[in-house]
Image 1 (cartoon, rainbow, N blue to C red):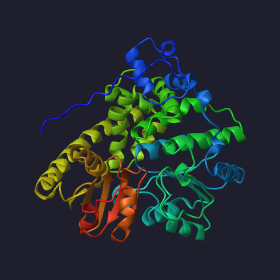
Image 2 (image 1 turned 120 degrees about the vertical axis):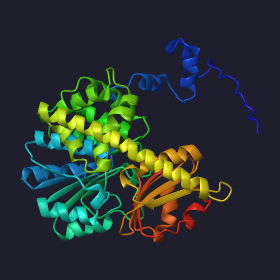
Image 3 (image 1 turned 90 degrees about the vertical axis):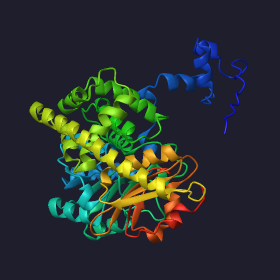
Length: 441
């Protein structure tokens, strides 16, 4: 079938509320800016030249006041604080940022990361038990997880552990009952739905410093915010654009020995661009959490030891190469299954699965499949006990998390940060209700 191109007429640059000739002397660039729908010249300037002074009050985020009050009380009472993170870049940078901030308040929080293979994502029963046994927290702060962990948080409350959730994943029907949940997605009217968890943690650190000022350079920590924001593939708009623009500058001049060595082994040269973070630095930081534990990525960001920094950077570089090979093998196997089983006239989605597929790379494979076939895609790897762990990626116009909610009786556990992203745990291998439902939302 031959394609027919329909060319839109060029926009009229004159006569509107913005004098484009004063902003930009290049007509082509002016038209590109005009298509973004700016209403005023100030909005255009804010887009072109983001400034930290334009960042909004952190207390505009839901439940921020209660969160700050509880953390400061824990500091004053010298309570045992545990920061409970996630094994991707957003989770690890969130953990590092809040740890460095609380240490500046003379606190000594314990840092906990779940084991991806053995315990799964977030506040799983297994990871919570290990955390309690090791650290005996009085206050547990869940970072990049917890929004969908109502039952686990009830269990923590029964053991007299207060819980604060800092997260950006999509909420399901019931929110956990805890001290506070700082998640913009719990408030439909919040303008901050685009923030990832490290952006929310940055807001918390800002709120703490506004409430109880100390000598602490939060701006210098924007290297962590830029790493987590770009690697988590959230929209680079609003305040995210400001945080990443300034954070990229901080990466280029970072004093972190580990990040310096990672930049070197990645072949990145200043100035730092989002592609450098998304395709070189981010995948190496993610590699450890995908194939084993994210502990070494966290240590790389926090270490001040030059020798350890070199060893960790080289280890992550090697892990990333191994991750690429595993991903390549699973993608090829999945494509072979799709060629045999997928019917584009029948199937509204693609679900592929097999035993032994490594759960750490399934999200990347799902993303490649969704992009290639323009279908929501879920990729699941089953272990020897028959338990499946999977990841899904969707396409524009199809809310994958809502679709899985309709199949919730067939899924043990699931959740997602965006409408087009999900993680899941499943025992069943009957996926007909998912693949053949054409519903869109």
